[in-house]
View 1 (spheres, rainbow, N blue to C red):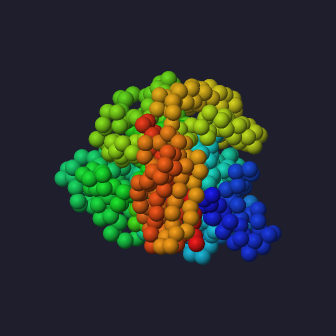
View 2 (cartoon, rainbow, N blue to C red):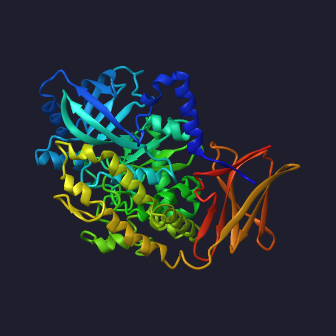
Length: 535
């Protein structure tokens, strides 16, 4: 029987042994994002007018920071660089006079060796804007992390100069620490796909082909045309050229995209965004809130970000002119943008135009639906989270919405003052019914019954027992530094498939079983979970 390799398990085992090496007495302090507890973060500025300084800095478009002292669960950190963060989550509450504004805290701003508990360089505190339920960010990240690299998230009580500002979302930054944790390094091309409107307003794009925000539309070969719509987070300017090469390939030769992009990771991102109706993403009107990192296998991999208005909290998908109704959110099509062949969303339209990619995408959607919606697991987890924070929300003096709204929004739609946040049960009860009965999910679909491997004279033989498949593929790589290669498997007899890999004594692999409507993978969460073999 094949042995499963869990990337997340490898990371957390490494973290555990590092923690033990640092001393068991600091064990709890190391887990800044433990979702079973609420962190306490206290910020101190020497300046009494700290808000005015941070506010004017933010409004000027500067990323400068004000120095302060920060206590995280009682541990002191001096010379921390602090600024306000966010766009709508900053500007909208600020315009109404709210004091609960989002923060970005940088431990190594002055002292390059200083990190927060767990080795984190940055703490990002969000004010739960547009989410009366307080559930959307933490629950969305928990779902995402089962299928792709995604941030950890919990809650923190926040004080500034001993004034309590209330309960915040505490979300792991997608930064060098995150990249090293998930991909083993942080030195490759790293792109933030989130338009910087302060930069864009100052530029003249009249000589650039028209695009649509950070949608990966091709806008020519000049990096000038992309700067502002995308932000280069890595240090080398070669990142712009690598991004443009990727975009050009996606738009002109999508059948070759596997040479530059981790397509399976993209399909998981699309499946996640669609099933949980996360439209404040690549999928929606603003086409943003994701990163691209060129991983050690030389492929660009997407990383999701900013989930405060996931789970139907954002009602604009970029196809319909106005807001989507509750019914349209509940029955949001798995093939939005693809059905209309929307040229403004090439990462959806061009990938799903490939029949095999489309079937894998549908299979990934079904996996998430079964894991979280049909099982009712999302509701069980939502109730656990609300129980943990109930008293803190009730006692939050600066919360943007009422305690009644917090209690109600689990079940029913609540106004946020800007829009309406659909009730989570309202969304998922109907969406479970809609998706679980989708024609592509029903009927006879492939099943991978058993996978095993064996040593042969000059390599490895992989065998799979598969039922009801038209084609079966083996997808393998030597290790994380090599891109996956997909090859067809051969039928030995009815339901028995095999493929030999010569010249290798070890590899990581998974199986794709293609049916007439969808494809299933084994392991089911491949390529995020893999089989591993070493002789």
